[in-house]
Image 1 (cartoon, rainbow, N blue to C red):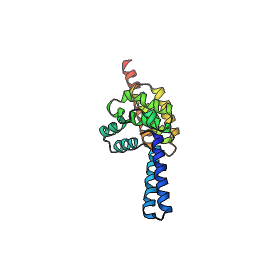
Image 2: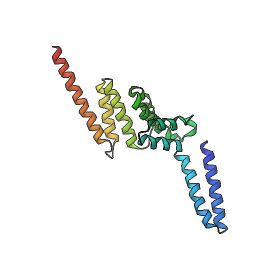
Image 3: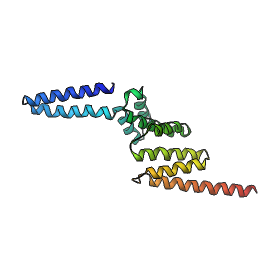
Image 4: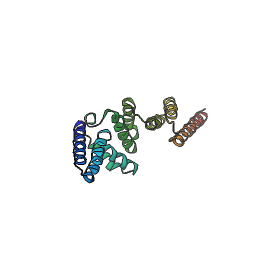
Length: 182
């Protein structure tokens, strides 16, 4: 359902609720106000995206992907602030199956923008992992530093530290390999 129709429906329900309360039917008016608020919230938070996030947290990738695939045209169905999150969710789902193919989704999410810093940090941390897998230490280091800077609430501090440790192990392995070749 297009977004503007949701707002029209929300205002119609709110108008009906106010009318009921004016005529003294408070018992029906108050729940109707709550319904209007719920419908208006779906303008800002798409229910398919919320369901996909829920199933992603439960690690049910099939259902999360199902709900994201139900969004046929994300540019039309979602508010522009949600476009980056849509690609972030696609990247997280794709990273479970084919990590190297998820890079395009994370880069697209960053280019479209996200309002929450920890989500930006998550995308950059994922890109750092992909760069490490490609043996591109310089790019991985840059993404890791950017992820650390974006993670203001230290929600991903453990993962960032673990990734740095893995980069150190990768350096030691490369140095050992070079010393064996000599």
